[in-house]
Length: 507
Image (cartoon, rainbow, N blue to C red; front, side, top):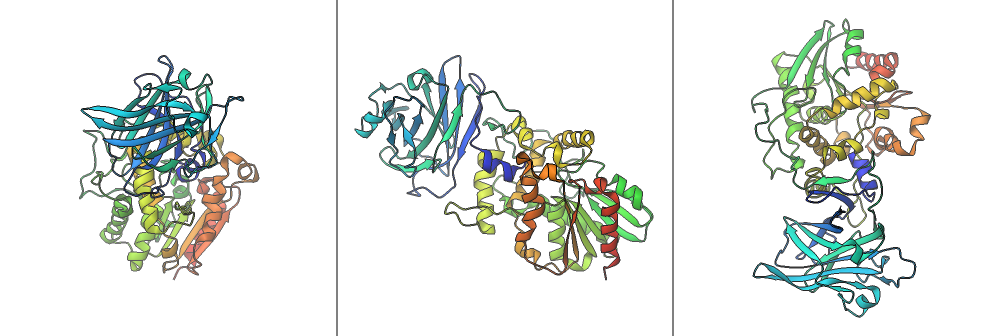
């Protein structure tokens, strides 16, 4: 999902009204890093979302947590700036001291005999500063615990007469504050805003996108990926389409170069209508790169089975790019050269302290935050509204939209598995050790695309990000001007010549 890595982290504060009563769909308005709480033994906030049951007039907040949740004793505070001009405001006393509220929802409870008792109410700023946390309304707050999340419900008209507001949440024990979400400023909520076509932030907590539904057909563990052979040239070339490739991404290239190369097109399982692999056990870290490494094994087995003498491997983005890099590092004697087409460069992840995450910390962020808190629950509508836009694919606008629709036909669990393994990966340091010659063809796009603010992540992901990789004389970076991700079709002559020149210089 545009992606995912780039768009989600920067746009999670966008708001949209949630669906109606009885829904398990929530709109996410803030995320929080793991491990930034004051006391690691108490609640550590992960995500803040809301749902508005308009017919019942109920506004619900959902605060999910990292790790275990003590469902018998906890505290949750929702601070709200209603925007009322005449309301007295007070600054929050936790970490988010910038936030000024005029309404405070307080839930500080202990469960006894199946019921929660303690402080449940709404206060104004003056009452909160006097520690009178229910001076406006008492015992009018609904509380539920669902898995790792606490749900807080109030009547909107008892909180504010407005539809737009700013909010934050704080969590802890029933007598101690521990963590804020967000850590600074606030989350914007607009219950009257139209549902956006792009940038939707809805999750459905009844979903589990990290596994397949019962009865979904998968490959046997011993089965290999689908391979199709074509061409009759002297040089063996393995082609690997990617998650954002069309089914025919290599067709025109093959037709132009059939006398130069013999092609072996290997389709990553689950893409282009093929059966996916079985999902690994739920406890498996995405840092194990289960599907990516199994694809690398498919490539190696193809080379050894044919056998192929030092073939050129051409990957169009991930997962093929990651699998080929792993193979080039682990079995360099099998590979003659690698061509990566429109591969996305690794983007750094910040930690809660602000420094860049190590590869190990990166995996933990993906495992605990992205996978379990976001991708597990994203709705198909949320996925598609944040996924690769048509403008990314090709200069041909009609074909670009067709390709966009085509890649969305891939089952959501398949797309998520490949994407999240990519997000967990960081081959930057290893890239400096690759001994196999590598050609990276980067799409140059054009000025219109690159200056469009909505598409600004193209430059960071496809172009600038490569500057963060270590220098390696074996790696050649080439930008193809006025080409988008489907480089081979947008600029066929330039792309073919770049690949042919690279192959001619191989030992």
